[in-house]
Image 1 (tube, rainbow, N blue to C red):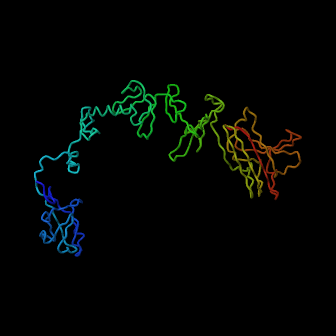
Image 2 (cartoon, rainbow, N blue to C red; image 1 turned 90 degrees about the vertical axis):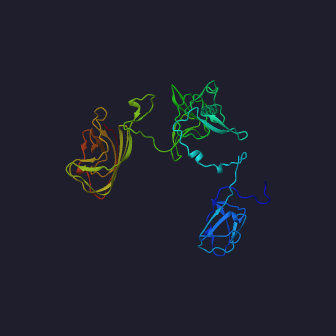
Image 3 (spheres, rainbow, N blue to C red; image 1 turned 30 degrees about the vertical axis):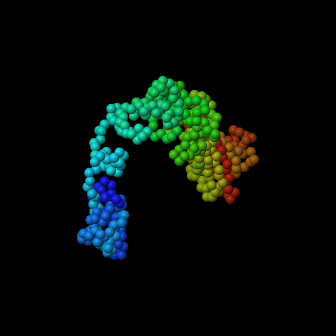
Length: 423
Protein backbone atom coordinates (compact mmCIF):
# COMPACT_ATOMS: atom_id res chain seq x y z
CA UNK A 1 0.00 0.00 0.00
CA UNK A 2 1.22 3.58 -0.52
CA UNK A 3 3.00 5.44 2.27
CA UNK A 4 1.95 8.68 3.86
CA UNK A 5 4.99 10.90 3.81
CA UNK A 6 8.41 9.69 2.78
CA UNK A 7 8.60 6.09 1.59
CA UNK A 8 11.23 3.73 3.05
CA UNK A 9 14.67 3.54 1.46
CA UNK A 10 15.04 0.35 -0.50
CA UNK A 11 18.11 -1.35 -1.87
CA UNK A 12 21.52 -2.66 -0.78
CA UNK A 13 23.57 -1.50 2.19
CA UNK A 14 25.95 1.30 1.21
CA UNK A 15 29.11 2.41 2.96
CA UNK A 16 29.15 6.19 3.41
CA UNK A 17 31.95 8.34 2.04
CA UNK A 18 34.38 9.41 4.77
CA UNK A 19 33.87 13.09 5.65
CA UNK A 20 36.05 13.09 8.79
CA UNK A 21 38.41 15.46 7.01
CA UNK A 22 35.81 18.18 7.67
CA UNK A 23 35.76 17.59 11.49
CA UNK A 24 36.94 20.67 13.34
CA UNK A 25 35.12 20.54 16.75
CA UNK A 26 32.61 23.22 15.78
CA UNK A 27 30.90 22.14 12.53
CA UNK A 28 28.21 19.60 13.53
CA UNK A 29 26.42 19.28 10.12
CA UNK A 30 27.91 17.32 7.21
CA UNK A 31 26.68 16.06 3.82
CA UNK A 32 26.39 12.29 3.48
CA UNK A 33 27.03 10.40 0.27
CA UNK A 34 28.09 7.01 -1.04
CA UNK A 35 30.43 6.75 -4.01
CA UNK A 36 29.99 10.47 -4.59
CA UNK A 37 26.18 10.15 -4.81
CA UNK A 38 24.16 11.94 -2.13
CA UNK A 39 22.30 9.69 0.37
CA UNK A 40 18.85 10.79 1.56
CA UNK A 41 17.96 8.52 4.55
CA UNK A 42 14.33 8.18 5.50
CA UNK A 43 15.16 8.19 9.21
CA UNK A 44 18.25 8.35 11.47
CA UNK A 45 17.57 4.69 12.23
CA UNK A 46 18.55 3.84 8.62
CA UNK A 47 22.19 4.72 9.39
CA UNK A 48 24.94 3.07 11.43
CA UNK A 49 27.39 5.79 12.45
CA UNK A 50 30.71 5.26 14.27
CA UNK A 51 32.91 8.01 15.75
CA UNK A 52 36.29 6.78 17.01
CA UNK A 53 34.93 3.25 17.03
CA UNK A 54 31.85 4.15 19.15
CA UNK A 55 28.45 3.49 17.57
CA UNK A 56 26.29 6.60 17.83
CA UNK A 57 22.67 6.39 18.97
CA UNK A 58 20.18 7.53 16.29
CA UNK A 59 18.08 10.60 17.12
CA UNK A 60 20.13 11.10 20.34
CA UNK A 61 23.66 11.50 19.03
CA UNK A 62 22.64 12.62 15.55
CA UNK A 63 19.68 13.53 13.40
CA UNK A 64 19.23 13.59 9.61
CA UNK A 65 17.60 16.07 7.30
CA UNK A 66 17.59 15.36 3.59
CA UNK A 67 21.15 14.36 2.70
CA UNK A 68 22.70 16.02 5.78
CA UNK A 69 23.58 14.57 9.18
CA UNK A 70 23.79 16.79 12.26
CA UNK A 71 25.66 15.57 15.36
CA UNK A 72 24.55 16.59 18.83
CA UNK A 73 28.20 17.21 19.63
CA UNK A 74 30.41 18.36 16.77
CA UNK A 75 33.19 15.78 16.24
CA UNK A 76 36.67 17.00 17.04
CA UNK A 77 39.39 17.37 14.44
CA UNK A 78 41.16 14.06 13.97
CA UNK A 79 38.19 11.91 15.05
CA UNK A 80 37.71 8.73 13.02
CA UNK A 81 34.48 8.01 11.20
CA UNK A 82 32.67 5.32 9.26
CA UNK A 83 29.02 4.93 8.38
CA UNK A 84 26.64 2.56 6.62
CA UNK A 85 23.28 3.36 5.06
CA UNK A 86 20.80 0.51 5.59
CA UNK A 87 18.41 -0.38 2.76
CA UNK A 88 15.26 -2.29 3.43
CA UNK A 89 15.06 -5.65 1.70
CA UNK A 90 11.91 -5.98 -0.37
CA UNK A 91 10.76 -8.25 -3.15
CA UNK A 92 11.20 -6.24 -6.37
CA UNK A 93 9.08 -8.58 -8.44
CA UNK A 94 9.19 -7.82 -12.14
CA UNK A 95 10.74 -4.39 -12.94
CA UNK A 96 8.47 -1.98 -14.74
CA UNK A 97 9.12 -1.20 -18.37
CA UNK A 98 12.03 1.17 -19.05
CA UNK A 99 13.05 1.28 -15.35
CA UNK A 100 16.49 -0.42 -15.54
CA UNK A 101 19.15 2.11 -16.60
CA UNK A 102 22.71 1.56 -17.83
CA UNK A 103 24.05 2.60 -14.42
CA UNK A 104 22.39 -0.48 -12.88
CA UNK A 105 24.15 -2.87 -15.30
CA UNK A 106 27.59 -4.29 -14.61
CA UNK A 107 30.32 -3.55 -17.15
CA UNK A 108 31.00 -7.29 -17.11
CA UNK A 109 28.00 -7.65 -19.41
CA UNK A 110 30.53 -6.85 -22.18
CA UNK A 111 33.97 -7.26 -20.61
CA UNK A 112 33.15 -10.56 -18.95
CA UNK A 113 32.90 -12.44 -22.21
CA UNK A 114 35.64 -13.83 -24.42
CA UNK A 115 36.57 -12.22 -27.72
CA UNK A 116 35.07 -13.67 -30.87
CA UNK A 117 38.58 -14.79 -31.74
CA UNK A 118 38.50 -14.18 -35.47
CA UNK A 119 36.97 -12.24 -38.32
CA UNK A 120 33.29 -11.35 -38.05
CA UNK A 121 31.21 -13.85 -40.00
CA UNK A 122 28.13 -13.03 -42.03
CA UNK A 123 25.97 -14.98 -39.58
CA UNK A 124 27.19 -13.13 -36.44
CA UNK A 125 24.39 -11.13 -34.79
CA UNK A 126 24.33 -7.56 -33.48
CA UNK A 127 21.76 -5.58 -31.51
CA UNK A 128 20.69 -2.29 -33.07
CA UNK A 129 18.15 0.39 -32.22
CA UNK A 130 15.52 0.60 -34.96
CA UNK A 131 15.66 4.41 -34.78
CA UNK A 132 11.89 4.74 -34.56
CA UNK A 133 10.66 4.04 -31.06
CA UNK A 134 13.84 2.83 -29.36
CA UNK A 135 13.12 -0.85 -30.06
CA UNK A 136 16.16 -3.15 -30.03
CA UNK A 137 16.35 -5.55 -32.93
CA UNK A 138 18.91 -8.13 -33.97
CA UNK A 139 20.67 -8.10 -37.33
CA UNK A 140 23.33 -10.24 -38.99
CA UNK A 141 26.78 -8.99 -39.97
CA UNK A 142 25.91 -9.69 -43.61
CA UNK A 143 23.22 -7.02 -43.46
CA UNK A 144 25.68 -4.48 -42.05
CA UNK A 145 28.17 -5.24 -44.82
CA UNK A 146 25.53 -4.85 -47.50
CA UNK A 147 24.34 -1.59 -45.95
CA UNK A 148 27.87 -0.16 -45.85
CA UNK A 149 28.45 -0.99 -49.51
CA UNK A 150 25.14 0.38 -50.75
CA UNK A 151 25.49 3.54 -48.65
CA UNK A 152 28.79 4.38 -50.34
CA UNK A 153 27.44 3.50 -53.78
CA UNK A 154 24.27 5.57 -53.28
CA UNK A 155 26.19 8.65 -52.11
CA UNK A 156 24.21 8.77 -48.85
CA UNK A 157 26.79 10.92 -47.04
CA UNK A 158 28.77 12.43 -49.91
CA UNK A 159 31.34 9.66 -49.93
CA UNK A 160 31.06 9.43 -53.72
CA UNK A 161 29.48 12.04 -55.99
CA UNK A 162 29.64 10.17 -59.30
CA UNK A 163 28.20 6.66 -59.63
CA UNK A 164 26.35 5.32 -62.64
CA UNK A 165 25.66 1.89 -64.11
CA UNK A 166 24.28 -1.45 -63.06
CA UNK A 167 26.90 -2.92 -60.70
CA UNK A 168 26.78 -3.05 -56.91
CA UNK A 169 23.36 -1.79 -55.86
CA UNK A 170 22.85 -0.47 -59.41
CA UNK A 171 26.20 1.35 -59.62
CA UNK A 172 28.65 -0.01 -62.22
CA UNK A 173 31.71 1.99 -61.16
CA UNK A 174 31.84 0.65 -57.57
CA UNK A 175 32.59 -2.78 -56.15
CA UNK A 176 32.88 -3.49 -52.44
CA UNK A 177 33.84 -6.83 -50.87
CA UNK A 178 33.71 -5.73 -47.26
CA UNK A 179 37.31 -4.53 -47.11
CA UNK A 180 38.17 -2.98 -50.49
CA UNK A 181 36.28 -0.29 -52.36
CA UNK A 182 37.05 -0.27 -56.10
CA UNK A 183 36.10 2.85 -58.05
CA UNK A 184 36.30 2.75 -61.83
CA UNK A 185 34.76 6.17 -62.41
CA UNK A 186 35.35 9.53 -60.72
CA UNK A 187 35.93 9.61 -56.95
CA UNK A 188 35.13 12.97 -55.36
CA UNK A 189 36.61 13.06 -51.83
CA UNK A 190 35.25 15.74 -49.49
CA UNK A 191 37.29 14.87 -46.39
CA UNK A 192 40.74 13.55 -45.49
CA UNK A 193 41.67 9.95 -46.29
CA UNK A 194 44.64 8.35 -44.55
CA UNK A 195 46.34 5.06 -45.28
CA UNK A 196 44.94 5.04 -48.82
CA UNK A 197 46.55 3.31 -51.79
CA UNK A 198 44.91 4.80 -54.87
CA UNK A 199 44.89 2.88 -58.15
CA UNK A 200 43.40 5.31 -60.66
CA UNK A 201 41.74 3.77 -63.72
CA UNK A 202 40.29 6.62 -65.76
CA UNK A 203 41.23 9.79 -67.60
CA UNK A 204 40.82 13.28 -66.12
CA UNK A 205 38.92 16.12 -67.77
CA UNK A 206 39.36 19.83 -68.36
CA UNK A 207 37.78 21.76 -65.51
CA UNK A 208 38.56 19.18 -62.81
CA UNK A 209 39.39 20.95 -59.56
CA UNK A 210 42.02 18.39 -58.60
CA UNK A 211 42.04 14.98 -60.26
CA UNK A 212 44.32 11.95 -60.41
CA UNK A 213 43.83 9.81 -63.47
CA UNK A 214 45.38 7.16 -65.65
CA UNK A 215 45.41 6.08 -69.28
CA UNK A 216 47.46 3.36 -70.90
CA UNK A 217 49.27 5.90 -73.07
CA UNK A 218 49.82 8.70 -70.53
CA UNK A 219 50.15 6.72 -67.30
CA UNK A 220 49.62 8.83 -64.15
CA UNK A 221 47.78 12.09 -64.84
CA UNK A 222 47.55 15.11 -62.51
CA UNK A 223 44.95 17.70 -63.45
CA UNK A 224 43.87 20.80 -61.55
CA UNK A 225 42.63 24.33 -61.86
CA UNK A 226 43.12 27.35 -59.65
CA UNK A 227 43.01 31.13 -59.85
CA UNK A 228 46.82 31.40 -59.63
CA UNK A 229 48.18 27.92 -60.34
CA UNK A 230 46.71 24.78 -61.84
CA UNK A 231 49.20 22.44 -60.12
CA UNK A 232 51.18 23.20 -56.95
CA UNK A 233 53.68 20.91 -55.23
CA UNK A 234 54.64 21.85 -51.67
CA UNK A 235 57.07 20.51 -49.11
CA UNK A 236 56.28 19.59 -45.50
CA UNK A 237 56.78 23.22 -44.42
CA UNK A 238 53.89 24.20 -46.76
CA UNK A 239 56.34 26.02 -49.06
CA UNK A 240 55.57 25.96 -52.78
CA UNK A 241 58.39 24.10 -54.55
CA UNK A 242 57.05 23.48 -58.08
CA UNK A 243 54.01 25.00 -59.74
CA UNK A 244 52.28 25.36 -63.10
CA UNK A 245 50.54 28.71 -63.50
CA UNK A 246 46.85 28.72 -64.42
CA UNK A 247 46.44 27.92 -68.10
CA UNK A 248 50.22 27.75 -68.59
CA UNK A 249 52.41 25.01 -70.05
CA UNK A 250 55.53 26.23 -68.22
CA UNK A 251 56.89 24.55 -65.09
CA UNK A 252 58.20 26.94 -62.44
CA UNK A 253 60.60 25.92 -59.67
CA UNK A 254 59.61 28.41 -57.00
CA UNK A 255 62.02 27.34 -54.25
CA UNK A 256 65.35 25.52 -54.23
CA UNK A 257 67.44 24.30 -57.15
CA UNK A 258 66.99 21.60 -59.77
CA UNK A 259 69.72 18.97 -59.53
CA UNK A 260 70.36 15.34 -60.35
CA UNK A 261 71.00 12.64 -57.76
CA UNK A 262 73.38 10.81 -60.12
CA UNK A 263 76.55 12.33 -61.59
CA UNK A 264 76.91 12.67 -65.36
CA UNK A 265 73.26 13.55 -66.01
CA UNK A 266 72.25 16.72 -67.82
CA UNK A 267 69.57 18.82 -69.46
CA UNK A 268 68.77 18.37 -73.16
CA UNK A 269 68.44 21.76 -74.87
CA UNK A 270 67.05 22.42 -78.32
CA UNK A 271 66.10 18.81 -79.08
CA UNK A 272 63.13 16.54 -78.45
CA UNK A 273 65.23 13.42 -77.91
CA UNK A 274 68.12 12.68 -75.57
CA UNK A 275 71.16 13.32 -77.74
CA UNK A 276 74.69 13.91 -76.41
CA UNK A 277 75.19 16.89 -78.71
CA UNK A 278 72.28 18.72 -77.07
CA UNK A 279 72.91 17.68 -73.47
CA UNK A 280 74.31 20.18 -70.99
CA UNK A 281 75.79 17.93 -68.34
CA UNK A 282 78.21 20.26 -66.54
CA UNK A 283 78.22 23.82 -65.24
CA UNK A 284 80.57 25.27 -62.67
CA UNK A 285 81.77 28.68 -61.57
CA UNK A 286 84.13 29.79 -58.86
CA UNK A 287 87.44 31.37 -57.94
CA UNK A 288 91.02 30.20 -57.95
CA UNK A 289 94.38 31.56 -56.79
CA UNK A 290 96.87 31.77 -59.65
CA UNK A 291 100.60 31.53 -58.93
CA UNK A 292 103.45 33.49 -60.52
CA UNK A 293 106.19 31.02 -61.50
CA UNK A 294 109.77 31.16 -62.74
CA UNK A 295 111.59 28.31 -64.45
CA UNK A 296 114.41 28.29 -61.85
CA UNK A 297 112.98 30.37 -59.00
CA UNK A 298 109.63 32.04 -58.55
CA UNK A 299 109.02 35.76 -58.41
CA UNK A 300 107.98 36.98 -54.96
CA UNK A 301 104.80 39.06 -54.65
CA UNK A 302 105.35 41.40 -51.70
CA UNK A 303 102.19 43.48 -51.86
CA UNK A 304 98.82 43.65 -53.52
CA UNK A 305 96.85 40.68 -54.81
CA UNK A 306 96.75 38.07 -57.57
CA UNK A 307 93.38 36.32 -58.03
CA UNK A 308 91.23 34.54 -60.60
CA UNK A 309 87.67 33.54 -61.43
CA UNK A 310 86.37 30.93 -63.84
CA UNK A 311 83.21 29.71 -65.53
CA UNK A 312 82.90 26.24 -67.07
CA UNK A 313 79.99 25.24 -69.32
CA UNK A 314 80.34 21.69 -70.55
CA UNK A 315 83.99 21.46 -71.68
CA UNK A 316 84.29 25.20 -72.46
CA UNK A 317 86.19 27.25 -69.86
CA UNK A 318 86.70 30.98 -69.54
CA UNK A 319 89.10 32.38 -66.94
CA UNK A 320 89.83 35.91 -65.75
CA UNK A 321 92.97 36.82 -63.80
CA UNK A 322 93.41 40.09 -61.96
CA UNK A 323 96.78 41.23 -60.60
CA UNK A 324 97.65 44.41 -58.82
CA UNK A 325 100.90 43.67 -57.03
CA UNK A 326 104.46 44.68 -56.27
CA UNK A 327 107.45 42.32 -56.53
CA UNK A 328 110.34 42.06 -54.13
CA UNK A 329 112.08 39.50 -56.35
CA UNK A 330 111.60 38.81 -60.06
CA UNK A 331 112.69 35.15 -59.79
CA UNK A 332 114.68 33.42 -62.49
CA UNK A 333 113.96 31.91 -65.90
CA UNK A 334 110.86 31.72 -68.05
CA UNK A 335 107.82 33.32 -66.39
CA UNK A 336 104.42 31.57 -66.34
CA UNK A 337 101.15 31.64 -64.42
CA UNK A 338 100.23 28.38 -62.65
CA UNK A 339 97.19 26.82 -60.95
CA UNK A 340 94.91 27.28 -63.96
CA UNK A 341 91.71 25.43 -62.79
CA UNK A 342 91.23 22.90 -65.66
CA UNK A 343 93.74 21.17 -67.94
CA UNK A 344 93.47 22.35 -71.54
CA UNK A 345 92.94 19.93 -74.41
CA UNK A 346 94.65 19.99 -77.84
CA UNK A 347 92.89 23.15 -78.92
CA UNK A 348 90.12 21.52 -80.89
CA UNK A 349 92.12 20.12 -83.78
CA UNK A 350 95.78 20.53 -82.96
CA UNK A 351 95.86 24.34 -82.95
CA UNK A 352 98.81 24.38 -80.64
CA UNK A 353 97.17 26.00 -77.65
CA UNK A 354 94.88 28.84 -76.69
CA UNK A 355 95.79 32.53 -76.75
CA UNK A 356 94.22 34.95 -74.30
CA UNK A 357 94.20 38.71 -73.88
CA UNK A 358 96.38 40.88 -71.67
CA UNK A 359 96.18 44.49 -70.60
CA UNK A 360 98.09 46.43 -68.01
CA UNK A 361 101.67 47.27 -67.12
CA UNK A 362 104.62 45.77 -65.29
CA UNK A 363 106.93 44.52 -68.09
CA UNK A 364 110.28 46.12 -68.83
CA UNK A 365 109.95 45.49 -72.58
CA UNK A 366 110.01 48.83 -74.39
CA UNK A 367 108.39 50.09 -77.54
CA UNK A 368 104.80 51.05 -78.28
CA UNK A 369 104.28 48.00 -80.50
CA UNK A 370 105.18 45.35 -77.89
CA UNK A 371 102.22 43.07 -77.12
CA UNK A 372 101.86 40.51 -74.29
CA UNK A 373 99.91 37.39 -75.27
CA UNK A 374 98.96 34.80 -72.57
CA UNK A 375 99.14 31.27 -74.03
CA UNK A 376 97.81 28.03 -72.55
CA UNK A 377 99.51 25.07 -74.21
CA UNK A 378 97.67 21.76 -74.81
CA UNK A 379 97.46 19.45 -71.79
CA UNK A 380 98.74 22.13 -69.43
CA UNK A 381 97.60 24.09 -66.37
CA UNK A 382 100.39 26.68 -66.69
CA UNK A 383 100.00 29.75 -68.87
CA UNK A 384 103.07 31.34 -70.45
CA UNK A 385 103.34 35.00 -71.36
CA UNK A 386 104.51 35.55 -74.96
CA UNK A 387 105.99 38.86 -76.15
CA UNK A 388 106.13 40.08 -79.75
CA UNK A 389 106.30 43.23 -81.82
CA UNK A 390 103.08 43.54 -83.75
CA UNK A 391 105.01 45.07 -86.64
CA UNK A 392 107.36 42.09 -86.85
CA UNK A 393 105.29 39.00 -86.04
CA UNK A 394 106.14 36.09 -85.83
CA UNK A 395 109.85 36.90 -86.14
CA UNK A 396 109.82 39.02 -82.99
CA UNK A 397 107.91 36.54 -80.78
CA UNK A 398 109.68 35.53 -77.57
CA UNK A 399 108.88 34.01 -74.20
CA UNK A 400 108.87 36.42 -71.25
CA UNK A 401 111.46 35.81 -68.57
CA UNK A 402 112.42 37.32 -65.26
CA UNK A 403 114.33 40.01 -67.13
CA UNK A 404 111.00 41.39 -68.39
CA UNK A 405 109.70 41.92 -64.84
CA UNK A 406 110.44 44.83 -62.56
CA UNK A 407 110.59 45.41 -58.82
CA UNK A 408 110.17 49.15 -59.19
CA UNK A 409 107.63 51.09 -57.17
CA UNK A 410 105.50 51.32 -60.30
CA UNK A 411 103.79 47.99 -59.51
CA UNK A 412 102.27 45.55 -61.99
CA UNK A 413 98.63 45.83 -62.97
CA UNK A 414 97.49 42.83 -65.05
CA UNK A 415 94.10 41.88 -66.48
CA UNK A 416 94.16 38.54 -68.30
CA UNK A 417 91.34 36.56 -69.90
CA UNK A 418 91.45 33.29 -71.80
CA UNK A 419 88.91 30.95 -73.36
CA UNK A 420 89.87 27.30 -73.81
CA UNK A 421 88.54 23.75 -73.94
CA UNK A 422 89.25 21.19 -71.27
CA UNK A 423 89.51 17.45 -71.70
